[in-house]
Structure formats: structure tokens, C-alpha cells
Amino acid sequence: MAFTSGAGTGGQAGPPIDLPEAAGRRLAAKSFSSALSVADFAACLHMGMRPVGLVQGFCAMGWNPGYYLPSQTNYGNQWQGGYGTSWSGWGNVLDNYYCPHSIIASAEHPSRGYNIEATGIEATWAEGYNATYRRMLEEAEALGAHGVIGVTDATKPLIGPRVREFHLLGTAVVMDGQPAPDRVWSTYLAGSKLGKLFEAGLAPVSVVGAFAAVTVLPVCVTEIQENGRWDTYGVVSPYGEIGQLSDAQTSARRLVRDHIKSTLDGGALHGADLRVSEDSLVGRTTISAVLRGTKVRRVRDAEPLPQPVPTVRLS
Amino acid sequence: MSDPDKPAMSREELDRLFNTPQGMVHDKTPAAPAPSSPSSPPEPAGQGGRHRSDHHSPPRPSSPTRGDLHQVTSDLTIDETLLLHSIDWEPVDMVIGASVAAIPTMGFAGAGWAGATDQSAQAFTSAVASAVARIRDDCSAAGGVGVIGVDVDFQVHRHTVQAVLVGTAVRPAGGGRGGHPFVSDLTVRDFLLLHNAGWEPLGLAFGASFVQVPYRTIGTVFKQVTANTEMTNLTEAMYQAREQGMERLQSSAIGMGAQGVVAVQYSDRPLPFASHVIGFTSWGTAIRLSGESHRYVKPRMVVAMDDAGDLFDLQGAMGTKE
Image (cartoon, rainbow over all chains, first blue to last red; front, top):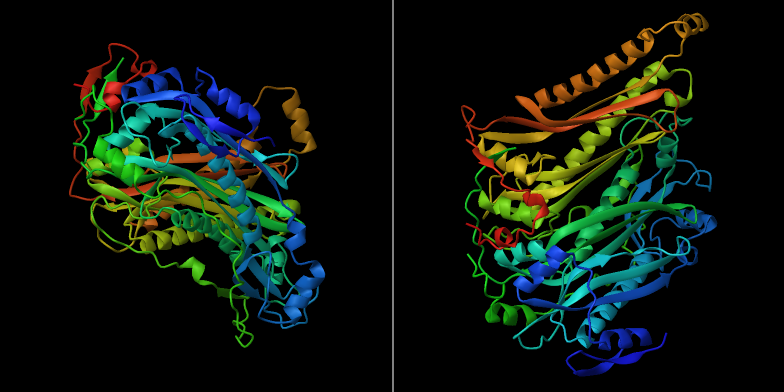
């Protein structure tokens, strides 16, 4: 990737930035592009925000989960080693599950089961998202912008499940008459929705995203129940809740919520958008959860609206 | 109300905004494995033992002060947040409950389908009930008195039923009563109307039934191929299954002490992995009167002079509309 040093449209020279050469040429042009709708564009101008350019950040990340995940043999050996399971490189054990049969473990009969937080994948995701976010802000800083509004997040798998592209795109705005900001703020909101946020006494701080992944190494009970079978010992029946899977589905979602809370720093997450997917990584079910939203801060005391008047529209 | 000729944010507000540290994203580096003791005894036999980490019940500060946004997560829109504030309620946290239940293998794959459809319905009930219990626990831990705007996701697989509920825990501003949190899939607007009309949500009512569409005999096929006629075998089987699903929905509401169910949604679709099997699932919010009688909300009649939906409505958005 070629890099260039950025200069804002106002002629302010900036530090070297981590952006392609074409970005420098585009941002230095004396016109702007914007992804805002006409209504949102008009709302921006009304709120004293002048669009100065379309800014974006991009990053492609790849990972090899097989490098981290214990092999089937190790899985058995881990059981034979009893407790003290070390899943170094893969993640933290969230839950342990035990075989009720009192028989010797084997690859065919896993007597221990684990729900593991896949911290290796989480760290890779965070690195990709952070780099993308930083590059988008660098473009905005090159334009001398105060903020980035109407951000869209087009993160998706690239060539195969183990390569993911991160892409943030938004419209940089300058608030005329205001001093240059220490930091550029950003939000998924734009137009009237952003106006309502200000009216509610809140101000956007930054777009935030978090990722959590939980890998399921099933215990024998889970495998038996998942296949709808009875076991031959009269202990496990294919009825009722499958505790390990229920815990995994719940943990993935709660983990990502807790991850994003760790970035809020006393603020709040507005407009949370939770997406969950399930993949099979080297034969192991992994539940991935992505949570996005706008981090907001209160800048004015809350002034509740008067009770809205119910209306019936005649047409 | 704001002055439309002025920027939306004052100089002080901007200073306050830009001089506060900004976060980026969760940047979690691989942590040390959770400690587990070699001498910990296995849990009693049954459907398997389990050791749960502390993650499932994280300590969460509950600071019931009005307008406090400390660490609040919410999937409400800005409109919904403002509406909630108008009745002096506030969001507390995004809360989650998920559960997976097993369906016995004789289910849709074998010849004994008649019994298996009942077991599938039981599995569905078990999964939803457990998911509701989990989201209630999460709500209580967050200090909420109920969950609204619950996104309901049911998935039926060959041997499992999965129920996932995600919503926003809410409470009256500055705190609220404890007790049994309600769970509702109503929007904030519907919750507000219900609240103003003197009703309160109690919980998520649900019901399910599964039916294997009966095959026709050769004789029936020949009779029906030459005439336009009702396919009574299909009518009977599917009508019965629909009624059964809705009966279960009502029973679950009655079990909560509700007077009725609003905003019932239902889904009826063939199961992708089992030919001739159709699943009926229905859910809604069970409600009861919070006072002695219903309060009429007296809506104001309005006649729109234009199609407001197509127009830019900034003045309304900025609160400057007359």
C-alpha cells in the first residue's frame, strides 16, 4: 500500500497518514462527495454542518483458526489430563461440562465439554476494525473535519470464511465557525435523526463495534441430544434443554455486549445493532456475534418531551 | 425549543464533547485461560454436569439516577428513546436470552411422526420458556423492571429448536419496583399507548404445534383427481394444528394471569428438512389491566394536507414545528 501525507481542503498540512496515494489526491480536490441523501444533506446544513467529503477506511484481515484449535487427539488428551485445561492461543474456557456415564473418554465419547471464548479470533477482528476506523478518521482529519456522519459499516467475508474485509464509509462535516477539534467524532446517524439526538441533550462520540466468538467443544450429552438419540446407559434422553448449546448462544451475545461496554467509558451505546452467525471452524461450531452502535454522551440535562398526543389520520 | 437559525450545538457543548476521551472498539488481547481446579469434583450425573464461569452473572452497577447514561446499551431508535422518556421511563441495558432444546429422533424422520409432533411442540415450549427465564434474569441483573421491543427468533432444526430473545430492559426513570420483570415484543410506541390506556404487559405468550400432512390413499387420489372438492384430510389436519397452536398460546397467557394477548404474530411454514411437516408457531404479549378499567386515550383526528412521508421534516425533527 502506498501512503501519502494529507492536507485538508483548508490548506492545513497534516501528519503522514496511513492511506493510499489516491486518497490523498481525492481529498485534496476542491469538491466534495457525500453519501448523504438530499434530505440528510439539507438537515446537515441546517444544523450548521457542512459536508466536505466522503471518507472511508478499509482493512482486510485473515486468520487461521486451525492453528489455534486443539486437534481431536489433543481434545481427548486434554480430557485425560483432567482439569487445568489450557486452551492457550484459542481462548478462555467459559463453561465446563461433564459426562454422566463414568466411562473412559475417547474421541467417540468426549467426556468433557467446553464452551470457549475464541479470543484469538476476537483480537484479529478488533485489530481489523480498529485499523479501519483509524484510517477513516485520518481521512476526515486530512479534510479538517469536525465529525463524520452517516457512517455505514460494510464488513463482510472476502474470499472465503477466513478472510474478512472491514469497510467504514461516512461523510466528513465541518462545523463552520467552530475551532478545530482535538478529535474527530463519528456517528451512524445523519439528518433528522442526528438532530433529534442533539435535541435529546446527547452528542455522538464515536461509532463503536465489538465482536465475540464462542466455540463449542461438545460433551457426550450434547452430542447425544443434538442427534435426537437416547444413550445406551439409560442416563441421557433427547428431551429438554441442551444446556451447553443454550449457554453458548447466550454467552456469545452477552460477551459482545460486555465487550462494547468496556469501550463506553461512562457513555452509552445508542442504536445497538446485533448480528449473530454460526460457522463451523475446523469442525467445531463457533457462534460469532457483532454489535455496533454509536457511543453517545450527555451534554445537556435530559428534558423529557411532553406526552405525545395520539392522533388518528383521516385520509 | 431550539432556534432554527443557530447551530444545533453550543460552543460549550462542543468543547465538552471534543475534550472528552473517545473510545474506539473493544481491543481484547488473548487472556490467560480461566483457572480450573484439578481437584474440583464433577457435578452429579443426570443430563451431565456443568461448571459455569462468572461470565453468566457479571456484576453490573445499577445506579438509578434520572438520565444517567453510564454504560447503558440500547437497541432503541432515537425516536423510541424520546418516546420512552415522555412517559418518564428510561432504557437500562440490552438484554439477552437464548435456549436450545432437543427433539427426539423419531420425530420427523421416522414413521412414528404422530407422537413426535407433540414432542416437537414440547421442545419448542421448553426452549422458549428457558429463553424467557434467561432474559428475565438478565433484566433483573441490569436493574430493569421489564423488557420491551424483544426481537423474537425461533428456528426449528431436525433435532433441535432454538429460541433467541434480544430486547431492551427498561424501568421508570430513577429506578422502579422489583419483582418479576415482564417480557414483551411490543414497540415503544405500543408500550406507551398500552401504558396510557391503563394496561400493563405481563410476558411473552407463545404456542406451537407441528403437523404431518396426511398422505392420501390411492382411492382418495382417484376420487379427487376427477372433481373440484375440498381436501378434507388436509383441512382437518391443518385446521386442528392451527387451533392447537393458538390454544397453547392462550393457555400460556392464562398461566401468567393475563386477560388477553395483543399483537399476536404467527408463522406457518413447512419445515425444510421434513417433507409434509408444517410448523405453526405463534407469540404475542400477554396483558392485563393495571387499574380498574380501561382508559380511553382520546386520539385527535387530523387530516394531512400533503404526504408528509415524502417531505423533509426538519422543523419537526428539531422541535421547532408549531
